[in-house]
Length: 287
Image (cartoon, rainbow, N blue to C red; front, side):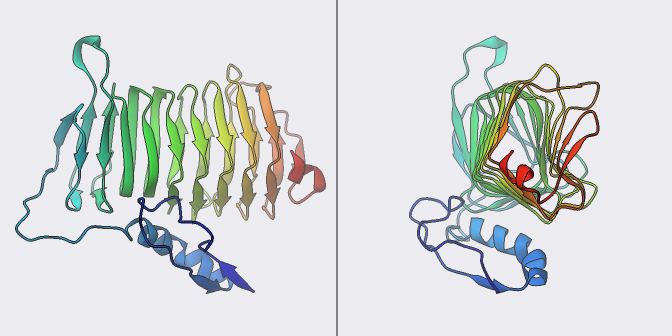
């Protein structure tokens, strides 16, 4: 049965405004699984500007960007951290700024973060990030229209917005962010040891995300949090689709509704007391 990878009715959200849209069909689950990563990265990079040999690189490895909007004009592959994004010093009000990758890649060949965001209000968009972004003590950071290839978004900040991204090859979201807004992301090709989202958070909103091929789909583990998990599609994970509670939390307040958790090796939804709703059951599809 043909698998439609890219909808033809509207421009994909991970392309920059004005980008062309193309229809791509893959046949068979094997091709879908092994080509998912390549397709995601290719679509994010589709609108990359043409390179000009006379244009010098505008950013170098290890550079610090402080409250200044930048559009990257080349790929940046570094042995350590590629960029540090900083906000205002001395507790002054932060000035929002944007890092537009413009279809380029930022990557680290080391074991640390590819980028770090500290006390900044920054939007990072339109490109590929190989490695994780450490998002510490920031407020209102936005990650949108990106392909996270391994790594992902890991951090401790307030009001992060993570929307319309691809997370591939084990990339995930984890941390203790407050008021996280996580919407319309696609997680695929994750290993059995990885969890797509670990929400040790306060007031997390998780809407309309699609997860396939991880060990666990979503974990909400903080008894002091309030979560809203709605409209997510979780399938073919190696364990449980949604896990509520754990790490000493017997219950997590909030709303879990309208999710479809099916065809998983474990249960569709598991509660902290060990009880579960079988994957693929009518109730699992409704919760």
